[in-house]
Length: 384
Image 1: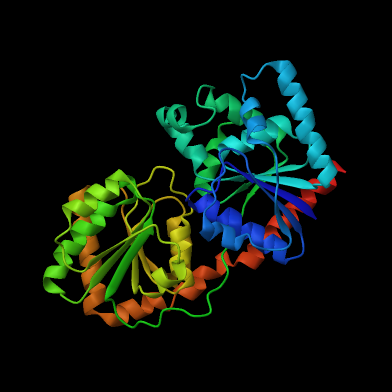
Image 2 (image 1 turned 45 degrees about the vertical axis):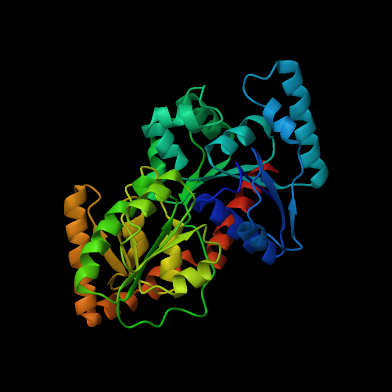
C-alpha cells in the first residue's frame, strides 16, 4: 500500500509523536509511506530519527503552493494548484491519505480526490469549545469552524478517533462518514524501571500552565520537607511560563529542570512515579501517560479526557485519579496525600506497578497499526 500521512507540522505534541510512530510502524510492515508537513515544516531530530526508514520518504510540495491554497485564494489560481497537487499524488500512485489535525484535515478534504481517512485529535474539541483560541491559533481562524468541520466530515471517507472525547464535535453534525476509535500506539519497552518504592517523581509535557506544573511543584515543596531523599524531574518545552516558574522555585531542593528533553528513554527509566495534574482543555489521549505505562511506571493524574480508561487494567487501575474540578489548594492536598501514602506503603506502590503492563496492552503499536490498515483497506475498496 502507498500511504500519504499529512500533518500541520512536526512540532511538539501527542498527535505529532503518534504520527511519526505510525509512519515508522507502517513502513516496517512493508508499506510505502509519504510524509507531508503541510504548513511551515519543522525538523526536530527526535522525530527525524523515527522517520529514518527506507520505506519513508518526504512528500515534496512547495510551501508556496500551500500558502496559495488558502480559502481566499483567487479561484483561477486555486484551480491550477489543485490540479497540480492531484497530478502529483496520482503520479506517486498514492492509495490513501491519512491526515492529522484540523487544519490539514480541511486542506486534504477540500482539495484531494483520493480516499481520505482523518485521525481526529484534541484540536477539534479545543476549537469547538474555545472560538477565541481557534481565531487566534488556527490557519483558518477567519472562517467559521463549524462550517469547515461540516465540509471535512462531508468529503472525507472515514474518521478515526483517539478518545471518546473526540466524538463531541462529530455528534453535532448530521452528516458524518463512518468512524471508530483506535488508540495511539507505542512499541513495547524491553528494559523497564525495576523500582520497588517511590523516590523519583517526574512529569514531562508542554510548557503551558494548564498542564498543572504549579500544582505538582507546590505539592513537592510540601513533600520534600518530610521526605528529604525524594526528587522531582520536570521535562518541558521552552516557554516564558516555565522560565518564570523555574525562577520562582530556584532555591527548592531536589528539583531537576530538563528543558527540551529528546531522550525519553533516559527520562522515564529514571522515574518511579509519573504525575500529570493536567487541566488542558484539549486533553484527550496524552502520549506521556502511554509512555509511563510502557515503562511500568504508575501514574497519578486528573480524570480528564480518556485518562481513566488509559489507566484501566484487568484488575484495577495502574495509577490514581484526581478530580479535575478541584480547586488548586484541594488538588495539591489530595496529590500530596496520595504520594505520601505510596511512599510510606511500598506494597501499595508495587500493586499499582504490577498493573501497568496490563494497562499498556491496548496501546501496542503493532496491533493498532493493523487496525489502521484495516480501515485503509476498507476505504480503498469502497472507492475502487
